[in-house]
Image (cartoon, rainbow, N blue to C red):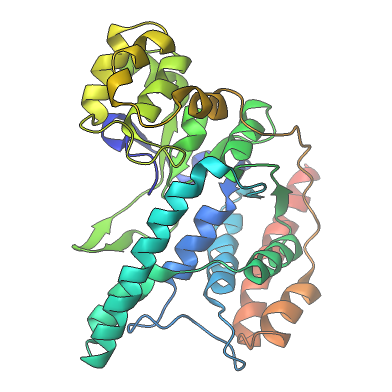
Length: 335
């Protein structure tokens, strides 16, 4: 679902050279869901090992992150923690959508519509607890830092940026921006095309800067939170009926304080705006010191090859890239 304010936000392309040596905090669930959805066979079947356990997430995490690490980017994956009850309606909506997609998939399967199967299979992806745990194990074995957030992972990632532990948050959503994450990077991938419903589109990494967004929109931090609530967040899906991004922006620019803004729409409110405002104003986050584990080649091979039947030749070949990067880093420290 996510926060639909993209049309209001300015961004600029960023090169991987500009990210070299910098720490990027990745919204783990956001990334893993992407891999579970996209790393599939043409008919929508996810990658699986010989025991028919899904491995799409492991494949995405390993090969994508090897590519990013090879570019000199330091990665920390931030995982969601405690579930906020205000997201109940969002989860209900998502579950309803999954049921619809599953029904359409079964119909396409009956009709032997491979394209339809591939399309609808992506709509009922489920992230299991065991997937989360083995994802953490693989990431740490690869030398990637893992942070367990007390609450929303994306908000914790933003806090890492605010406290100087990371340079930017990597996510396709905007929550990290709304809570004041200084920089948000979208499309953090070496791929140049992404498949959408209407076909393939060109993509490149883009950076969004929090202060620049506020200045261009002509609002402060509190009014930015109000704008998000008016449009609709995961904590109040749908926002205020009839109010889109542009109308919401006009409204928050007319009034200075949140109380005044929501007084204008109080007859339309179907939720407690103060509760949602508090989540973004005072997110449930902790101070963390990011510690990067050492690359454990044997553990990576054990997880991917030993447990899940990945090609040992291909895994070792990619691990060699990380070893080469490590050697180059050590040589640079000598000069």
